[in-house]
Length: 344
Image 1 (cartoon, rainbow, N blue to C red):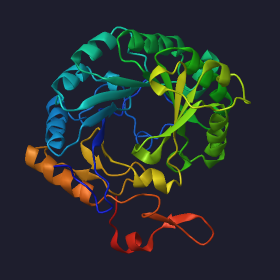
Image 2: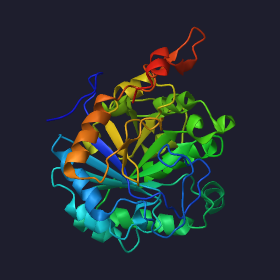
Image 3: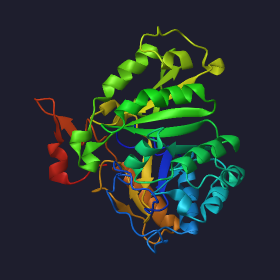
Image 4: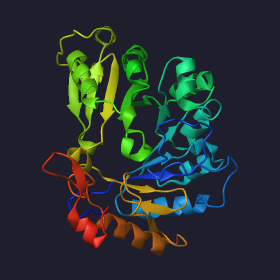
């Protein structure tokens, strides 16, 4: 039985934060919408234990949830990561977002235990630029980790790049990189100033869409979040004057670039089928909000099921419902939710 909210959005995926610990300090990080809550690098008592995570996944799989993305912080700081993946229900696709520094030496084991896909955060192809953004000197280790993931059969490996003032000039180089290297894809993620508090870093993501549309051989839409995917060959990636032509995606030799652009995007929210779980074991119906956190108590099967049903029932699209456009074209909180105090 798949659960849907009042807006007809089926929940088929969950994002589970395993920890808020991280060995990076990326300047744009919003920690899954919770803000800078990072604690010390040692495991904390507030993290869900192995059995809690597995029990949650077992329960939601009975509601038709067929995919889980493991996130953080840095999820590979969890020493029980392989066990969690191994015990995840077989009906679920398992993916993970990581900074890649711990993939060397563990990528093969992760694949063997059941990890299907991996996203690696990589915002620049120059060590100094990378260090400026991540506050880390681990560029070489990340590159090694990406290759380890490809070699382990976790390809295509998605490289996550947040597009904002500091990285906008690196986009073309990253597109060329994935177009020229088999086994890689690029996910360009719109900077979210409402979660990071630095609106001056924002850029117009539509400019990136327009450039990719000019050079892509093929463009497609994903149902999830109404995202656009651009298929770019190596030659086109080096030119801004290429002519788009239809392509056979199955035989395409080049790079796939997907844009995740949630800011003030009602279509994105209208096609969202995810629920999030914080590292402390709270359900979160929407990335953009923290007034909808729902406790799962002691995380018994009954408590998990009850809380999951409630959080799905209370979900509303953030843009287009919780926030609505006023006469000036600006988004503001819907009066309905100011008065009732309920929403996703």
